Amino acid sequence: MTAVRRVALQDVATIERDIVEPSQIEAGTLFVGLENIEPGGRFVGVRSVDSGELASSKFAFTARHVLYGKLRPYLAKIARPNFKGICSTDILPVLPGPELDRGYFSWLMLSPEMVSLTASHATGANLPRLSPNVLAEMSIPLLPLPEQRRIAAILDKADGLRAKRRAAVAKLDTLTQSIFLDMFGDPIANTRSWDLRPLNDLGAVERGVSKHRPRNAPELLGGPYPFVQTGDVANCDGYIRTYSATYSDIGLRQSRLWPAGTLCITIAANIAKTGILTFDACFPDSVVGFRAEERATVEFVRLWLSFLQKNLEKKAPESAQKNINLEILRALEVPNPGIELQRKFTRRIDAIERCKIVGHRAIHEYNMLFASLQHRAFRGEL
Image (tube, rainbow, N blue to C red; front, side):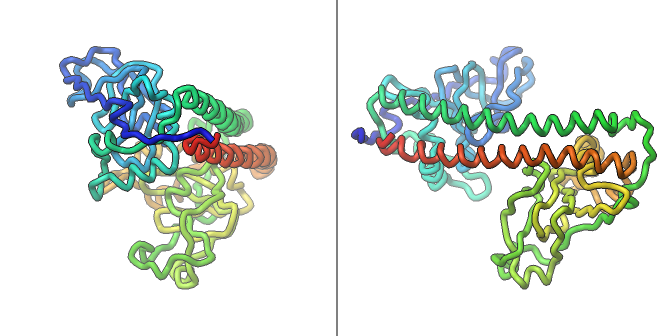
C-alpha cells in the first residue's frame, strides 16, 4: 500500500478566474457552458462563438486546466479540455501545479466520495453552488507523482473500455433507425405514400393517472409497484428498464397499473420522448400510454414518434412550460404500412434488442469494475 498524505487543494493547484469581457471575445473562440459538459466529464456540443454573441463575462482556460462545474456539484460536471477557450463563470478552471497530475486530479474529483463531499459544502437552496474558496481549502489525497500518473493511466484505459461499449450500444440504436427508413421510407414526408390513420385508430391512447402528487402524499410511495416518471421515459434507450420510485397499495388505488409492452409518451418538459415498458408500472398524467391493437405494433409507433419528436417539440404551445395534450397525440396521422410489415420490423428490432441487453450488461460490469478501481486508487491500494 502506497503512503497517502493529504493536502489542501490550494497547495497543489490554482483556481484561475481570468476574466474575459464580452468586448474581448474574438470570433471563432470556443465556448464551454455547463450544458456542454456531461456528468462524468464528456464534452458535448462545444462550438465557436461570433464576436459580440456573448453578453456576459467569461473565464479563460487552456488545455492544461481541469474545468470544474461549481453549480450543482452533485452533477459531477468535471472535464479535461484538449483545447483552449472560454467558459461560463459557473465553471472554475483549475490549474494543477507540478505536484499534481491533471488526470489524477480529474478522476479524484469525479470519484463518488469527492462528489458527495463537494455537494455537501454547496450553498443555495434552488441553485446550490460550491464556493471557489471552499474548493481551494478542501483536503485531497496526494500520492507520489509517478503513482498519480499510473493511476490516471489505469482509469483512463478503464474508462475507454466503457466508452467503447457505450458506443457499440449506440450504434445498435442507429441500426434500428436505418432499418426503419429502409422498410418504411421517410416517416415524416411519407415518401412511400402509406395510408394515414390517426394514432387513436391504431390503439388506445390514454393519459396516466396521478390524482395526488407523490411529493405531497408520501404514503403513496415505497411499495412494490414501479412508478415510472417523466425522466425515466426521457432518459431511456427506447425500452424502460428502470424506475426512480415505487407506489404503495394506497398509491396503486389512486393510480393505474399499465402492463409491460405499453408505449409511454411524455407530454411535458421532454416532449414526445418515448419508451416501452419492460415491466408492469404506474405513471403520472405527464405521460401518455399507447396500447397497440391489431393494426399496429408499439415498436413501429415508437420509432415513428422518435423521428417526429423534434417537430412536435417545436409546435408545442408554451405556457409555464412547453407541453402537448392528449387530443394532439390522438389526432396524429401515422403512416400505416400494414400489420405484417410492422411485425417483420418488430422481429428485426427484437434481435437488435437482445444484442443491446448483452451490451448493457457489459456496461454495468465495466461500471462496477471502474467504481472498484476508483475507490481503491485514492486510498493507495491500486
